[in-house]
Length: 299
Length: 124
Image (cartoon, rainbow over all chains, first blue to last red; front, side):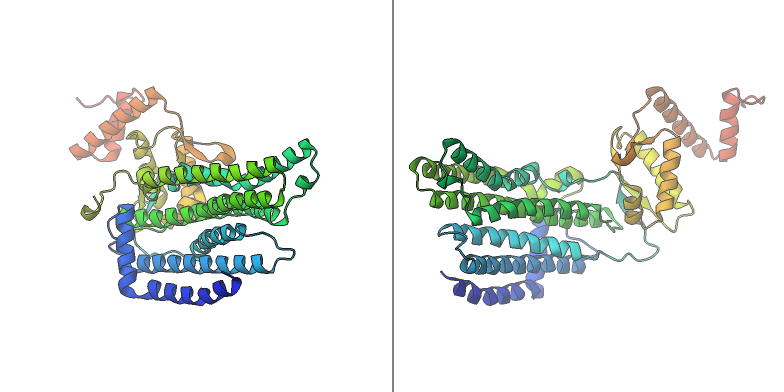
């Protein structure tokens, strides 16, 4: 599949996303699905606003993912000398898909203006300061931070091993691998900064349920943001190991690189299963709203 | 653990914030060491001026309910058990005074007399 294929697919994917996210019936269904997912009763007063917000976020995620894939496809096709060999670029595309989606969701959340309160309405606020740990499950939060430095650690370890063994051919770091490592560090720093800014924004609510929904949408944005370092780190490490494996002709080093891929694959599957089974989308609910009554349909 | 500010209430907003935080601390819902929102953040959430929240925090700090730890933020102060029991007793007394329909000034006069701070003895 060449760059032309991805470029041709992008407008179609964009059109599909527009249709899915703008049809009122689908938007309503999406909100109901999300309410069940986070175990919250549907908002009574701001349902249209919430529907609109969810749809806008989802559309931004789609646009970000499509943009990421197109940018990665163009980069892998035009970089001279070729930045990555096959199959590394497939991993770059997958990483770009998830990272682009996370960036899209983050940008959308950052641009949201929030609800304008009606003057004279009572206002509700939490008496304690909420932190990132209240919105994002530890495995996702700390996992993202750890995974994001893996490409760099892998490169440093490979370079150190090659230097130590006195192999001059192995100490040359592939350009693409270095780019991925730097990108991964940049993404985790950007994600942390954006997360902290999002946490610091005021929440406008007149009832507990409104505040709970604001928390739900905030948690979703923060979890989306935490996806970026996880995606870049995981796919980046695969990409770095493959690039190293391709660049190295020597048996022992090549075997070590491909062994690392196998190990990472197993670890990624185990972490994904553990994380999913802990229902991380309800983490904010357990931390911030343990006593809020769940909707009857969600029990 | 919610704070509610009603702009239509005759109670000033700073007093609404102050009294609710005191109540949450007394009920044990806000435990010692719990971090409160920043002045600016709470003001934004409640739709009131930062000075209003700052005044409530200042009074709470003077009363020993909360403490500011530099740029780390504002926290619920460690609890003095004796003071806490006295505060609970005072709250119970205030509730009883309200139940009896006595004006607050009369309740205060009786408490002052019971503490031996005035010459007039409490009415049996």
